[in-house]
Image (cartoon, rainbow, N blue to C red; front, side, top):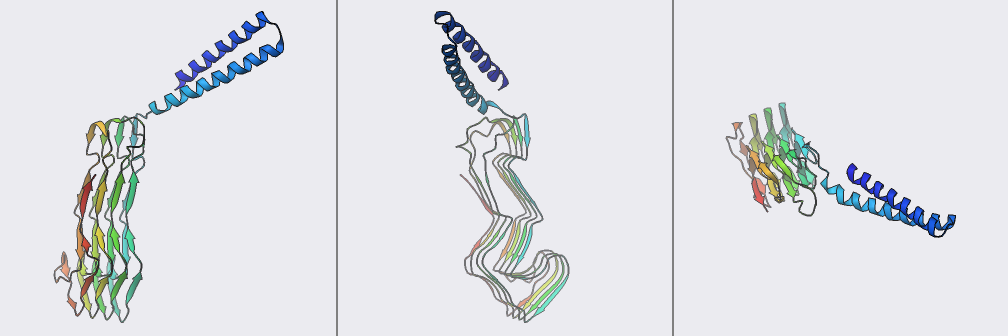
Length: 284
C-alpha cells in the first residue's frame, strides 16, 4: 500500500515539474504556469486514488482469531413453564403459566464477510456452550424437586433454541487464507430443549398433577444451516462444518424416567401442535 502511494506521489511530482518547466520556456507567464500545474496535480491525485483502490484488496492480516464470531455460554431460558433452573424446589398450585408469543434462546445468524488472515482461527464462527431452553413444560433443569398442581404451562407460539445460520460470503471480494481452523463453523455443546413436556434435565423429580403442558407452535432445537464459502483456504481444518455435541430435545413427552430422575405426569397431557424439529444440519 505504502509503496504504491509513494510511487503515485513521485510520478505526480515529476509530471508537475515537467509541466511547469515546459510552458514557462515556450510562453512565459505566471497564469499559464499555474493552470498547467493545477491540471497536472489533479491528474496525479486521480492516479493516486486509482492505485489505492487497486491496492486495498491485497491487504491481509497475518493472523485473525474470532473475528466476526459469536460466543454464548450457558444461555438458559425458562419460558411459560413450572421449572427449577438450579438447586432447589418449586411447588405451584392453581398457578397457570402462559406465554403469549414465541420463545427464542441462543439463536445466531452470521455472514462470512470477514477478510481472513493468512492463518484464520474461529472467524465467522458460532460457539454455543450449554444453551438450555424450557418451553411450556414442567421441568427440573438443575437439582431438586418440581411439582405442578392444577398449574398448566402454555406457550402460544414457537420455541426455538440454539438454531444457527451461517450464510456464504461469495459476494465479498478479498483474499483467502493459507490455513483456516474452525472458521465459518458452528459448534454447539449440550444444546438441550424441553418443549411441551414433563421431564428432568438434571437430577431430581418433576411431577405434574392436572397440569397439561402445551405449545401451539413448533419446537426447533439445534437446527443448523451453513452455506459453504469458496474458497475456504488452501488448508481448511474443520472449516464450514457443524460440531453438535450431545444435542437433546424432549418434545411432547411425559416419560416416567427422564435422564437422572423421575417425571410422573398425572392427568397432565403433553401437546405440541406445530410438531417437533430435532437437531439436524443442512449444508448448501
